[in-house]
Length: 171
Image (cartoon, rainbow, N blue to C red; front, side, top):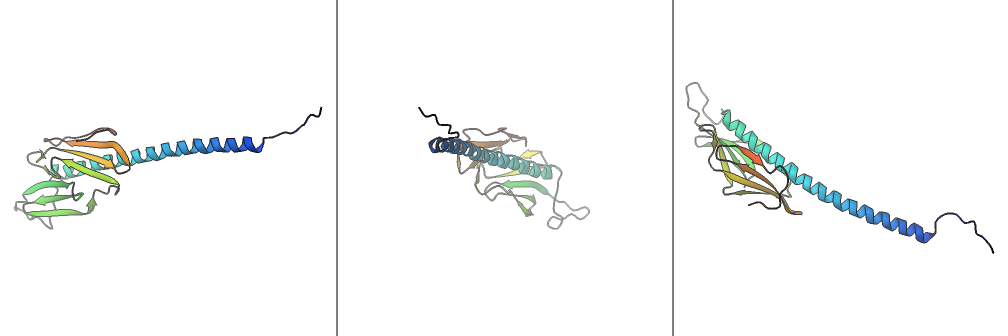
């Protein structure tokens, strides 16, 4: 009887190991893509919340553009406040009949993120009295991520709250 002293792996064993590694890598890659999409939506929601707080802060401090509003001594500035326009995705101030946008101050969200605001598409943060003209719920979604939403609520008194993460439904 002849005993072979061959060491190593056969070609079949090597192919099976490579196939198992490829399957494991494809599962890991799919999980990473899903995680990346979720993080994109969460980041967009946190940016949206920051934009709302920026407009709120500008309204509460009475920030105006003196190039558009009359800021001379003794003149009434009549600042209405700061608008957040969810349809045009921008914020801008208002004094009387004049709007003053902030140059290049759009939402800056990814083109894949959709912003839906209900029941209105524009809110006004007022300085007097403090608050907003309409309470609103803002739902952000990502085109490639089904049934995942980031929800932000702005109450009538101006308080801003969010879902703290992704939720499955949003009005």
